[in-house]
Image (cartoon, rainbow, N blue to C red; front, side, top):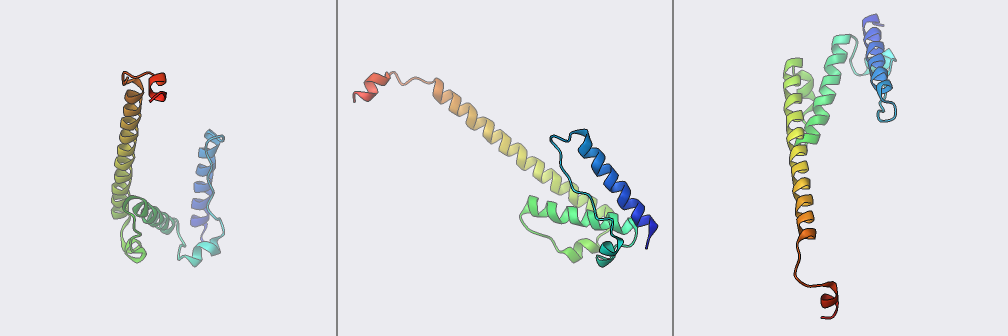
Length: 131
């Protein structure tokens, strides 16, 4: 099989393991299969095809997370890497904006809760219970 692909897989796996090793208590990841027959079953025979296939996978999952639908696999496979990278950036921007909106909402809720705790009705607990 292709030594280029085997080398690319080993390099990616080494990078993944190095990333996990930076903070093993908080990071976990799987490595890619190094079985070239496995990759051949997906039509991946070169390092370039591997890059493209993994980029397609990233865009497929990011689109699902950002927009709530899975795009056409065939359409993604037919796209060039530059187009896929742009699409991935758009998905990441969408997800980032959604997360920022969620955090802003959570902060506003927390502030409203704290304000409600600080406000006084003018009634004591004894007066309220005695009603």
